[in-house]
Image (cartoon, rainbow, N blue to C red):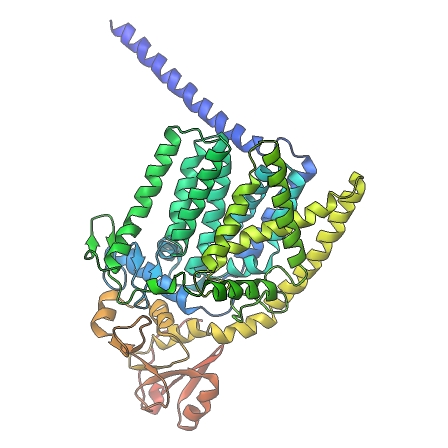
Length: 563
């Protein structure tokens, strides 16, 4: 009896090991099958584009763009608060939406920053690395999506290359604006949905990606809902919708992920009070911006987004460099050609009564224009539009090559055309890492990190120029959230965009300084001469100067500072 039991256990163990090996083989097969129809040269090209694209998005994140934006700083500070206490700066436990600024901020970016800040501290690199990683993964996702849509490796490689050197995508991947994560999750969701039509297990990954996009940007709430609805309607119309347990599981997952945000809307529309659970909180914001999204003036709003696309500029230097634009100044005709290519392929497959994956990209573009027509927008607020349009640009370039009959001529056209684009990217990159770094430093407060961290070592009251937003000081000093709530003095509470006089030992000066030798001043570099003439010691940090009296002059005792 004992021998029989032992034999049975051994048999079960062997079967489990076989199942594990089989699963491992299936995963390997799934990975390698993606490249099975590619030549060695195409695989090498894919690897080079991905590797170079990743390096360009990840290297020197703390220095380029120079300084730190006020939104990414506040997102970083919220990450610090959540890491320490499990609550945001306003005291809400695991909020689904942050109360930041008074009218709120999307929460996912702050949660993704937590492990990096836990490991490396409150520095600029940690705020930007989640976005840079997503931007890098997006390059591979773009390749696999276009390959799925066109069944053509060349088209996929061209589109991947175009996204890798796209000025808008390069810039948005290198700083931590929380809403700019959303286009990447939408790209992942679309890829997994396309795969999931034939392999339903991938619908679960699509649902998770759609769900995560909701926590990146509030405008994706209607965007994702309409997009998913139209995708399913299309599948039903062409009789490719085959309901199975994976559709049900995906629907349940997406509903559960969206439910906290539905409660958040009910709370802020005044239907229910703040919802607090052990797993999340749907907070009541100080002011709610729901009125920004409406059907009123849709014509003017549509004209606004078209002006942005045609001019490739919204006047905001952190979104676009005017002389290069979103797709480069020569890129718009190729975007239009790519759009025509998608429509032609869709019509061709409709006539054959075949499934057209092109339709899923077209749906996103149509829904993007609809959403953009319901709110006055700029490039970062209309970010849902530009990955699909960049894919169109890649397809537009590729479609021209298909007009040539000889393979050699096709390849030469692509080599020359993409080579010219690479030259433009080199020019763009040179400008980005030199002249642009100085220009953006004015808006992103170049030198603020070193200036505030040095000033914070001095144990006295600190007066800060109002050109440095208070969120940057909060992040760089990592002030305790309870201390902040207990000491903050608001200028305009309640308000949609809260401003403060100061908190703790920090005071923000709009105009004129009450000069006291016992205090420390963080001022614009051009204001430092006044303090020097009064006998203050000064230290320059980028665009800012820290002014203080040293011990020998009867001033304060200096703290410790390491360069």
